[in-house]
Each structure stands twice: as C-alpha cells, then as structure tokens.
Amino acid sequence: MQLRNIAIIAHVDHGKTTLVDKLLQQSGSFRENQRVAERVMDSNDLEKERGITILAKATSVVWNDTRVNIVDTPGHADFGGEVERILNMVDGAIVLVDAAEGPMPQTKFVVGKALQVGLKPIVAINKVDKPDARVDEVVNEVFDLFAALDASDEQLDFPIIYGSAKEGWMAESEEGPKDQGMGPLFDLVLRHVSPPQVEDGPFRMIGTLLEADPYLGRIITGRISAGTLKPNQNVHVLNADGRVVDQGRVSKILAFRGIERQPVEEGVAGDIVAIAGLTKGTVADTFCDPQVTEPIQAQPIDPPTVSMTFMVNDSPLAGTEGDKVTSRVIRDRLMKEAEGNVALRISDTTEKDSFIVSGRGELQLAILIENMRREGYELGVSRPRVVLRKDDSGQVLEPIEEVIIDVDEEHSGAVVQKLSERKAEMSEMKPSGGGRLRLVFHAPTRGLIGYQGELLTDTRGTAIMNRLFHGYQPFRGDIPGRRTGVLISTENGEAVAYALWNLEDRGPMMIEPGWKVYQGMIVGEHTRDNDLEVNVLKGKKLTNIRTTSKDEAVKLTPPIRMTLERALAWIADDELVEVTPKSIRLRKQHLDPNVRKRAERAKEAGTVPA
Image 1 (cartoon, one colour):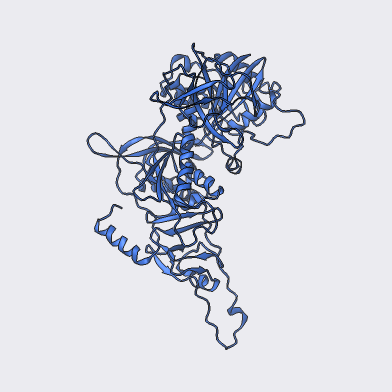
Image 2 (tube, rainbow, N blue to C red; image 1 turned 180 degrees about the vertical axis):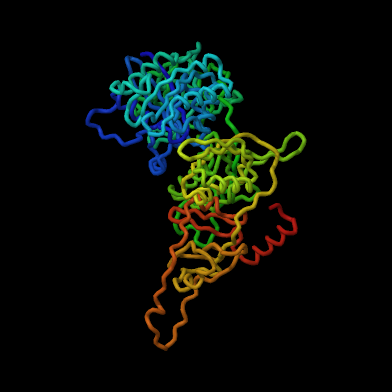
C-alpha cells in the first residue's frame, strides 16, 4: 500500500484536533453507530479538561488505497519540544491558519522548524465561516511569513485550501463546494506530499515518542527510515554518540489503524510504527539492526528558558494527603518524565532533597506538577526563574519573548504601561478590526511570569496574549515584583471563623474556617507592602453575660481561590507552593520566624545571593 506521512501544525485553538476528528470520520475509521468523543485525539485527562493538546499523537487513515499517517501536534509554545521531535517523522505538513486571527506566534515557530527540515507545506485556511473572517488578507500574511522565514521557491509555491473543520468540509475555493467533505484535502495531500524517502540497508529508526504501557512496558514510536522489522528481531539502540545503550528483541510491532494501534507482522520502511520490548532506548536514540554502527542525527532541540526548584514537602502537614513523599520517588518520577520529554532538563542541587527542573515555560512545568499531584505525589515548588547565560565577553544574557496581545482599543494604554514597567519594548501596533489593536512587544521572560492574570484584570478579560521565545539579549535590569506583603500564620491548628472575621481589614484571606494551618503558612494577602504574622486560631472569649444573637453571626468574605498556575506566578522568591493531591497551600520557605529574620538580614547584607 502507498504511504504518506503528514503533520498538522498550527497555533493553539486554530482547529487541529477538530480537523483530525473529521478526517477520521470521513475516511471510515469509525463504525456508523460508534460513539466517539469530541476531539478524540486529546486522550489525556488534562487535555480534555483544558481543551488543549499537550502531547503529539499519531493516527492513520486510508484514502483511495493510500495509507495516510497523521500526527496531531500541540499549539502552545511551551510544548514546542513535541513539535520539533515529530517533524523528522513526516514528509509534509498541513499548516492550519484561522481565517480571522491569521498567522500567530506558534504558527511562526512551527512553520520555521518545518521549513528548516525541508517539508513542503499545504496551507489550510480554517474557520472561513466566521463572521469576522478575512481570507485574502490572511493568505497574504501567510505568504509574508513564509518569505520572512527564508522559505525556498518550491516551499513558497504552496497550495491553499479553504474550509471549516467544525462543519467538516474543505474545498479549493472559500465558497465551497461543501458537499465533498474532507475529500479535496485528502486528494491534495496525495498529490502534493511525496511518498516517504526510503534509504537502503538494514533496519534503522529514530525514536520520536515514548510512553509506558502497563502490559507491554516501554513503547517507542518512530518512522522506519530503512529496512524492515519483524517481531522477535534483534535490535541495538545507539545514542547520539554512537554508543550502544541497549540491545534486545522486539516483542511487538504496533501500527496505527484509525485511533487504535494494532499488532502487525512486519514494519516496512517509511511507515510510522510503535515497538515494544526494549527497556532503555529513549527519544532521539537510533533503533537499528546490530550491524549498523552510525546513529541517525536527531533534530536539535531549543534550550529551556524557565526553571523551578522541586523539593521534598517538609511542612508539618507533609504525608497527610499524598503517599509519594520521599526524594527518591520524586527524583525517579522526574527522570522518567525527562526521558520522554526532550524539552525538559533535570539537575540535582547541592541539597539532596531538591531538584532543578528546567523547561520552556510555566505552563509546561505546571502541567508536570498537576500530573504528579494526581499520581499521589507531595512536593514543594519554588517561583519560576529564568535560565540566564553569559556571552563570550562575560555579559549576562536573559531570554526575551515575542509577545502579541490582541486588545480592545480602550484598554491598550494600561497594557502598554504595565509592559513597559516590565522592561518590554513595543515593536508594532496595528488595528486588527472590530475596534481592537494588535500590540507586538519584545519582553524579558522574567517580566511575563505572572502577567497573564494582571492582563485579564486590566482589560476586563477581553485581551488575548500569545508568547514565543525570541532569543537571548543583554540583561535588562531589575523588574518590580509583587507590591503587597502576606499574612502569615503564627500557630498550628484549624482556622477559626471569628479570627478570620477580625483579620478581614488586614487584607483578603486565602483560607476558610476549619482549614488546617501551620506556623509559616501564608493565609492571606496583606494590604500593605510588609509581611504580617497573624493568629487565625484565636476564638471569641466567652463570658457568662448574655448577648444578642447578632453578635455571634459572623459573615466572611469569600477567600481568594488559588489555582496552581496562579499560585506559582503570585509567590515571591522567599515563598513556596506546597502541592498535594488534595490541596495547594502557600508558605514561606523558612517556617520559623527567627530563621526567616536571619535570612532577610543576610540577604540585605549581601552574604547570600537574592
């Protein structure tokens, strides 16, 4: 059977996963009476909850006696490592662009990577049914983007197809016809994307996706670049340096058939398959016949820009809600994550109970923490910090991001002011239709940590922000942090409503009556800029004098609800987020007030780095 391998790449929310749904339906991958979930490729719990794609996944359909392997990719820049890896598995890419929004930062990022690898793209203008669609302008913007990314003449001669993934049609004209469904897109893929390039020689394959299966063990997905593979065949695994890191027999070969994987008797060159049976081979390693000695070179991966410290939870409530609390199990879990996720870096610190985890952004690290807490882990996490570098002359460099904000005109002043305070430089300002402006900034990653919530407050929830790593530039100086202090509990026990009621004029609370607190835990936000120690266990003194009932009715203002992302962005450098399967608590790094004061004095004296 003829083969085609394609990836669907686009900015977040431009309709990749919905498009894959329709391709699967129209190719007959589902039975007529089969119940299928919406966005069937988003199989992970967090993907379903958040409505985003986090992991790249493969599927396949048959169209006119040709098997088309399709890889669905994430749209967030934080998960760009997933996209960079899968591009060497495919021979073509469908670049999906929203007919109203046009090419956005992540479109630019993934298209740049695809063009570097030499893929010939197909541009699909999606959502042409939207009332604010501006199809002709978007096509011109896509062409300008390709030209700016140094596309070759062949790549610039890209075919264009129009349609609506949600309505389930694509056509060579934006008017239709709509009755052919996804047929025109399939036909265009067969015409425009060349069959996979197959090399001579014995079996070779580079690992691209890694996962664990409870029955089959470690499963590696990749595209076979040469030779064939059969079950029980002996295989060597070579790392990037050509050293043998594993050897063994392949127990099972799985090929993608619709949304399921089915065992096959032979994997052929050019096909995307998953293999089981090896215990150590990982992503970017070469799986090959024992006589092969040269590894296949993997695509270089962009470096991480943000790091966090993960540490053992040492609060008085440690171990009460989770069952995985020791440094050994936390370290094993982090190392396992880094194996399959090439954009993550894990390093040990001088303290044996903490680890530095570096990634592409706060969202990527927050997803990792959320997955760990759901698996029963307890840990303490520091505020995100940027990964700094030094150039040859010793000058400190920091990561700079390109930030695109779509905002109503009336709120643009507040956005420009806030970002200039955060050392951002505006590079472009243009109207984007409907009384909205598109603002483009180059801002330090440090200044963007925690800005999303502030932006939504300043713009009444109407702004849309997109970020993309731009490059390293000279350090831009200090950026002001949080302007308010915190309320810190002085006692261990359960919070009392009467005490919380009396403390309301000190600032908004983050806890409710009956919640367990401990010394050094943050229970609220102070209205002033200094920290204040408070007692939230203090009950009302009872006497034998009668009072009216109105004296006892305590009405409390609802507390601030801290999600994981909001907590990570809100805390200061001397504070931690305590994450357990049931709770997210904020605390000071040093729980003892005397130790805290000593640390502050030492910091002011300059004996420890800030």
